[in-house]
Amino acid sequence: METPVLNSPRPPADPNLVYKRIVVKLSGEALCGKTGGFGIEPEVLRTVCSDLAGVYALGVELCIVVGGGNIFRGLKGASAGMDRSQSDYMGMLATVINALALQDMLEKHGMATRVLTAIEIREVAEPYIRRRAMRHLENGRVVIFAAGTGNPYFSTDTAAALRAAEVQADCLLKATKVDGIYDRDPAKHDDAVMFKTISYDDFLAQKIGVMDSTAVTLCRENRMPIRVCKLTTPGNIRRVCLGEAIGTLVVKE
Image (cartoon, rainbow, N blue to C red; front, side):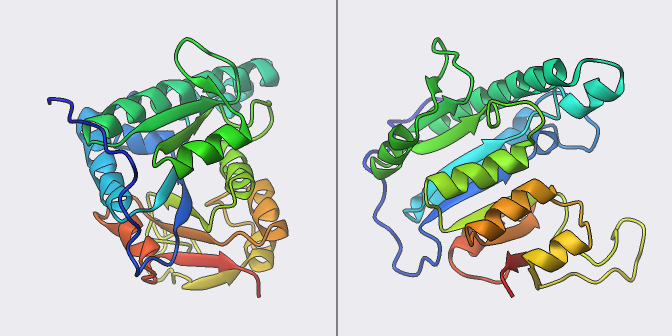
């Protein structure tokens, strides 16, 4: 694929936008195309970035936080006997690999991007500085946050919630493998019911596994709405930005 000229400045915002600045949380597994898989599947990566290009074309200020579970998951390493901190640092480096893959494909779709990492790797990405991230967004660039929070014991979900608060996003979008949040596991129960809306407190009380409790608590404290929807349904992220009731919305009572 020939690399097009990168779009700059950002397209003018669609007047119908409900969310003008969002943070999208992508799991690492989403990039390999199957649960428990390994590596990056180019066609899946291309499809995800094509969807994100549709969001960018609306004039949305777009941030992405990506996990690293398709390469290395810190908790899995720790459960196998590794030191937890060491294992988590390895997981952070895995997220940098995914971030660079996303950057390459997004730029092939015509979007100017910057990768900002919580661990300094200056040869391949910029160090995370909040004001720099804000400036990139204002200049029409897609910002990809890598290496989590830069600290062990914190998930990339928590990193996404933290970055969403820091850049003053309108919404944190958790793009996952299911349509939304259910009252029970839909893979095991045919009668599982999906919530259209659920409060932060109910989410935490029911110990729902879609997102970790630290991330949800952080969103609650900063009144950051969370929208959970299915990544593999084409156009879902775009629909969320335009205000359609896709998936499940997590908000205050």
